[in-house]
Image 1 (spheres, rainbow, N blue to C red):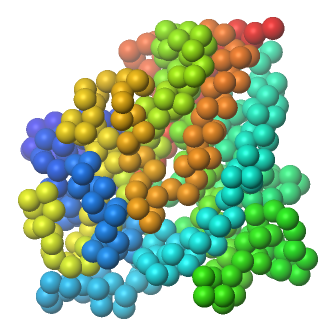
Image 2 (image 1 turned 90 degrees about the vertical axis):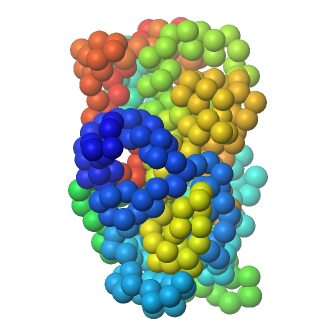
Length: 421
């Protein structure tokens, strides 16, 4: 990709189909550079991205959903945009979500969630995952083929997070319908507007209100009764918005990651045989897949004050595009970064889950999703392959990818296999 052909990351469909040439081009420009279409500063350096994540006082999350769109309505007159960010915070997409909050507001709302995702509750949820994996595989094993996304990944991701929260099984179908109808965030060629998760708010409001009237021993019930650190009681809508981001974030990214992971497994029979024989290597396989095939391509921040990053001057009020897929291929951090090596000593150092105060709260969940899915598929299915009838021959595969500049995943993954036993 020559400089004269630099693509618009936010609108070019070829970047959706294959972002890796863009990652490579972006890294060649340096750890920080300004893209020509929207004026966003692209950050590809691993160290630079980690520094941004760990400095919320300098880099605001106000534009975490929208990136350079819409940006501040007014240009800062000096080297500090903090006052403008606070004044116009409500113009940014999903400004009501804790993903766009900065400390201390973010700390209060994230605390409602994190105090309840206890080791005991996560262990109970993991027990549910083992049963669910078998139930879903039961539904297609005898057919010797499946669309893994539709018949496993989407249902598994939704039901796992629904079980964690305590959403009754009778409501799962409606919840899934709402997610499908809305589609993914950050559609290529479109600017996000408003609250992306508003379609879930009335659904979760009913749960929180009911659990305030009649407390229940589940995550939603405990969230309904939780207080902020100072002892004050959150408004119902504040709790609802924490629940919606936990649900939507866990469901959307996990389903795509499972697809990315199993797609890799099905493409390389030698990996299947290795993992069948040496199950203790599955966690490292999950980590290296997260590094190379993360379901999240990019994240965004806004510079509160003028600063210098990676040798580049960043004016106050600038949008920064944290290109996670490029950072996880930074050769300064990862040896032979474009190669899949699950035994690399720093395999867990990827930035797929972010860093700092906004690090993904569902990271343990995604890791368990991947590990358990692999265990049960390898136990029950042999010779897992990509369907050439559906996706074409090796070296010329055809997939429909999620049409968004935020997420990376396939919309369908047709597999063929031989049932075991």
